[in-house]
Image 1 (cartoon, rainbow, N blue to C red):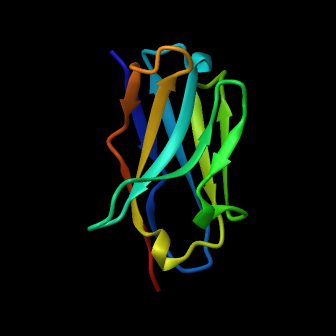
Image 2: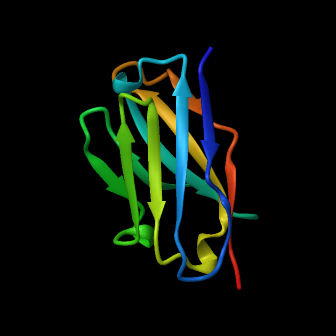
Length: 118
């Protein structure tokens, strides 16, 4: 059974930092492209950052230069380091895993809330 478990969300002041973690189980982690998405109230889910199985990265325009995705295949974990947080970063952040070849193997975590507010 595949599980993605996010952690690290919370309340932070504007300009602050948070690091999200997503621990995967039930998959051969190194075979998966990993991504972080977010969804704010009333808005569509959007890509925040992604790292492929061969370590290529991609970022949403609104987070470039502020957020960094990384993965530790030995720990089956992907991270999202978020710096210089803004109120508009407030959203539920979801972890996503997609097999690099079999794209129908597509899994989501339950989400973790990030709130940026003074």
